[in-house]
Image 1 (cartoon, helix red, strand yellow):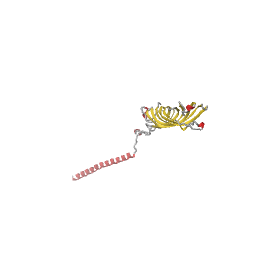
Image 2 (cartoon, helix red, strand yellow):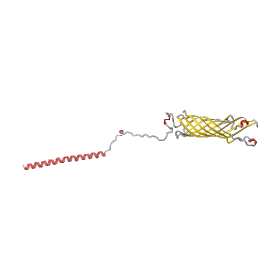
Image 3 (cartoon, helix red, strand yellow):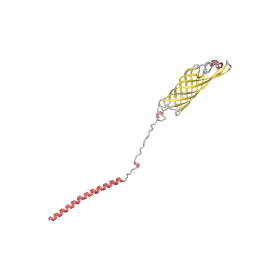
Length: 266
């Protein structure tokens, strides 16, 4: 009986030992499998679907100023930059003409004497011009009428201007011109009207000017500037005392201030 009890006890001990070893081995096998799976997952490359990746676009805004100035000029009444390809303007301002500044006429030259009158006149000057603009320069025709005393000075010709529009609101400009000149109501030397008959005064000149132009609205601007013009005038007539034709000339300079109102219709 005692021997039977000992045999049963030993059998129970062996069975318990086997059951305890089986969970441990199972846990070890599971751990090894997990480590092996992780290693394989790390070794395999991950496939990425390119179609699922969204495209990224970057919008670039040019910080440089536009040559056209304010882009809203086409819709706004006011525009800070002078617009338009065609311009028409009227001008007004004071003028001073020193007709004999560089050369005068010696009335007693034929008699060996010297009588060279100086002629300096002042008065208002009116004008009109029309032209076309090409980027930074323009070309046009100009007419001016100076109301002097005792004669009037008429000017007609062409000029070329350069406008700097990089400065908003105020645009500096420079101008060059070539003109035909004549007088009305008398000759450039008034005393010759008493000595000669059938007198005519004709000539030409070249001018240089500068100023600033200010936009008012998108089709209207104003300008303030000055011009200096070299003017040569040639006087022709008949001298009844000598019974011969007379011809001689003067060279002078005119300085004028100009206020201009300009329309830019196109």
